[in-house]
Image 1 (tube, rainbow, N blue to C red):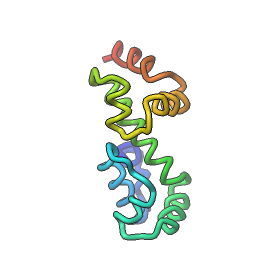
Image 2: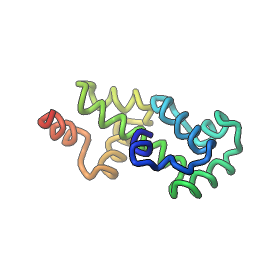
Image 3: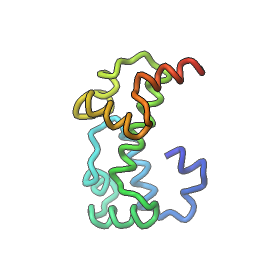
Length: 121
């Protein structure tokens, strides 16, 4: 969420989408589904999905994953938690799934990311 606020991307955003983003950011360590987000902001899943895509250009589920991966990057950089602990903490179905998603999005493995960022910090 901080990425969007810092870039000014929240300007002109509907209250529903903003509230959805806040809910996701606050609950990133929970097993969040699109239906949970819709329920939290008192809108239907289809309404939220359409509004989110219309305003931001991507799916609610993509934002959920983006938030989880940002939190994972922070944990990899600033803690010594194992990959198993991080994947469990962020409610990934397995450590293998976490590693696959991370590598697909970041183009490096979580451990490579940790080594790179810990050298810089």
